[in-house]
Length: 373
Image (cartoon, rainbow, N blue to C red; front, side):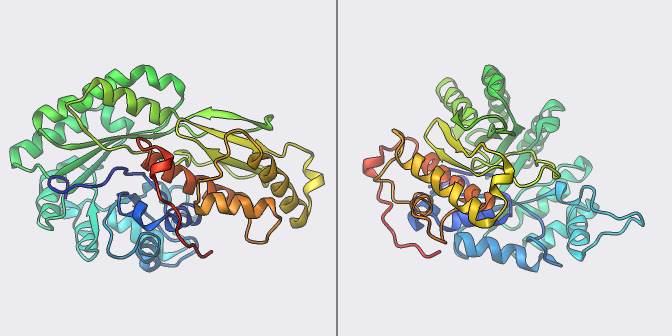
């Protein structure tokens, strides 16, 4: 999987959410062939069970394309009622998959039925690591590891690498997930690269990714501007300094790594336009009372779209689903952007394409495919 004939150029971590699944679903098919999505499993929207989760992923990328399957532990946080019960069976199902008994046997039995999924090795219970590795390796699909900041601080990546070396396992992909970051993290790129290098010395020729998100947590008080894509800057610096590493670019697809708490009402209409190294945005920063109806908000999005299309960074030749939705929005069409989720899907769709083709001039990329909303 991760050794011979590895053609993937981008491995974004994508949430199993309507916006993110729509964004990748609407990419050109040739783009999907080059993307290896990392998707933490959870319940699909309001589903009662996990039965709808994998089918939604397959609807987005196709049922013949590979993907990396993880488990979304955050899905369970704060979901139990005062009696200690979950509101839906799907939460119990995810909890059972996270059970470490017998080398995460529930996770193994679940993943072996999903032929296109490469499993992420669960690390919450390191006492079960060797047995879990033996079971998941028997599937012969490669092994993925996703280290969060706590794992990295506790050197879990080195313990895993040592165990892999002892067991002679080399078909692996190691993802170092720094979650939500700011521009100050760029200064630590040497430390990040050195941690990867330590693992590479133990298990040479492994595939690596550094993933994170610097997408802003808030746009309050701003009506337009730009934000740097820090995750891309970190990757470029690590790639240039540590050329011996076999790196695959990864990020959160321009979604936040941290969830935004509720209670703030519907955010002001905003459209984001991803470029290679930064995100541009235009926000309708006016009194919310003036946007009390759906028609008012649709009109606001239309005004924003027109401003965006007249900006100097707008690319008329970029024929993507996301850019076409912005064009429809500018015309006031019903299929345009009329809510934050639709706007998010548009941004992620454009961002995924841009980062996939980061090293290729726009003029060399053919995106002219028919799309159906």
